[in-house]
Length: 168
Image 1 (tube, one colour):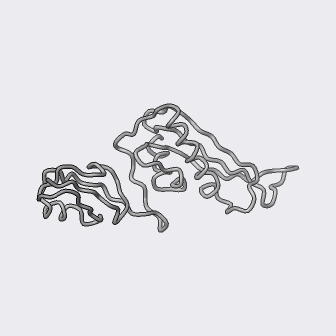
Image 2: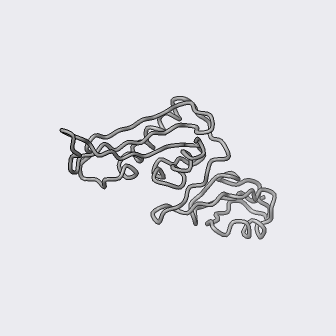
Image 3: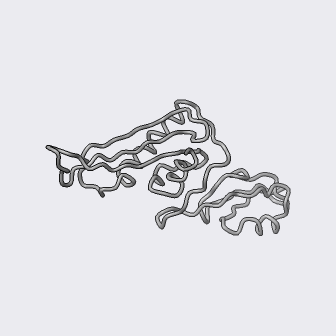
């Protein structure tokens, strides 16, 4: 079940709640309201339930919006962006650490492409260039060997983001 909930956030309707480096599980919901035994027209409760981290839960969030106005009638557009902001606060308040092994998010057309920065410390400038084709490189210092890099290896950076190399 935890795997299924995590896949909703990484690959399904909960993508707006995805937080890089954290295993978030969730489920969206859209419920049409009833009055006098009949479904009301255009009157819904949008909800999102989330758990963090999904593999070893420390917190559960339930968010419901009663009859939201001026929005798409899908909980994935209405509740998940709000839930993400609350989840970030929960992660901070509970000091939940990043961990490896989260599902990779399926990118949508509005998402920016990111790449993991490889370790180029100790490499020649030519070797580093080959390993960093998706980034803009800025050099500081003189020499042909990379002494340090920023950001560090393993961090993600947007396509054509800047990697700074100190040469010695």
